Length: 452
Ligand SMILES: *[C@@H]1O[C@H](CO)[C@@H](O)[C@H](O)[C@H]1NC(C)=O
Ligand SMILES: *[C@@H]1O[C@H](CO)[C@@H](O)[C@H](O)[C@H]1NC(C)=O
Ligand SMILES: *[C@@H]1O[C@H](CO)[C@@H](O)[C@H](O)[C@H]1NC(C)=O
Image 1 (cartoon, rainbow, N blue to C red):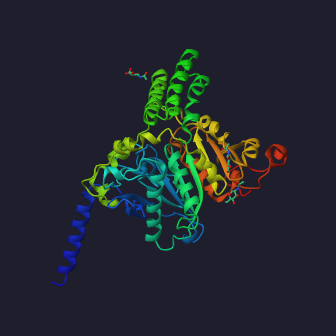
Image 2 (cartoon, protein in one colour; image 1 turned 180 degrees about the vertical axis):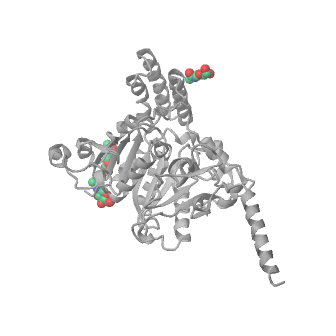
Image 3 (cartoon, rainbow, N blue to C red; image 1 turned 135 degrees about the horizontal axis):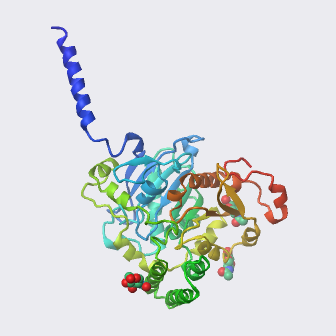
């Protein structure tokens, strides 16, 4: 008789094992769960809150209280940072199937904490209490973002002094300078220990940038001379609307121009000339609309996840063509700025950024423009891109990547951001006029992970 309990235990264990085995594998394995996720109330918009996912550093090299914190902001206007999280730079991504998260070999949270914010309110899983609370300009975007960041830092003990780097892509070429400018100008002694701003394939100074489309596609062989003229006319329509301060019409005209380029070139996507199909951001939409995803991330099951919010796009349409170049000029005098672009992007690519960079009102511009553009080699000795740096300004052109640099070049993008934050490799060393001393420097390694 005394064996009965043992037998019972054995049987029930067996049964449990069988029933566990017959369950489908979880969508989110434990390792794929964010360290934290949830909502940050946004003042001064009562009832509104920003959704976030936070991933602590996997292999920090300092105590966590000193470990840098990267913040990622998606573009749009109106697109969710969960695209960045689950399709670009987060530690677990959906790459081929919405039901299978795979570890990212180039996750940006190897050495640093990584915070994704659905910005502004109304985007992704974020909540806008009312339509009126959705920002209409970069000032309002910055105020709300700042409130959310302060809330996040206050909620987490030991985060007060962590160096903060604000990063983002595409239309975040507006958000990143806006929050940087706000902190540096109005909250220099506030709760956010800002150490740098990084923008990937950004829209920052739209008029200068859209003027590059026609020549860019012409010299790439994608259109002929007659089509180039047509594109130049379309560009000028948008620019003349900007001059007349018809901001929304100017934004519409820009989209018309991009559609025209799409029609002329017949490419699958203007975001990457080498892709045969558009980026698969739809996988993230499918992933996040599954009940289990919402449950583990702390989101109400009744919320529907959309890649980009029409309501937010509508609220910010009048902002699209406005330049924030002056905010970058202000920031680069006070903190580090990285502008990087995947070379295969026809929307916000390398030339599109270099054109406005060379018009920056910045004391270091002359030195920057004459600094050597160095070849960056990856671990295999292959060309990974080009790096130009002087003082607080760094520019990187990334080889083999389009608009979504971390999707196309995961490990290289991670090496880039780590080296920039840590001031290592091509981002390290003295500020020297490379044109005068390049022969001396040639002997040094140009690998990012070298210590010079
Ligand atoms: C682009 O092509 C579509 C489909 O052929 C057409 O409806 C549209 O008017 C075109 N747009 C422009 C700006 O050329
Ligand atoms: C670069 O940023 C630092 C702060 O990190 C600032 O003190 C310095 O003045 C800036 N340098 C230039 C040339 O703008
Ligand atoms: C350049 O910036 C300085 C202040 O940083 C300002 O005084 C000057 O007016 C600006 N110049 C132009 C052409 O905007």
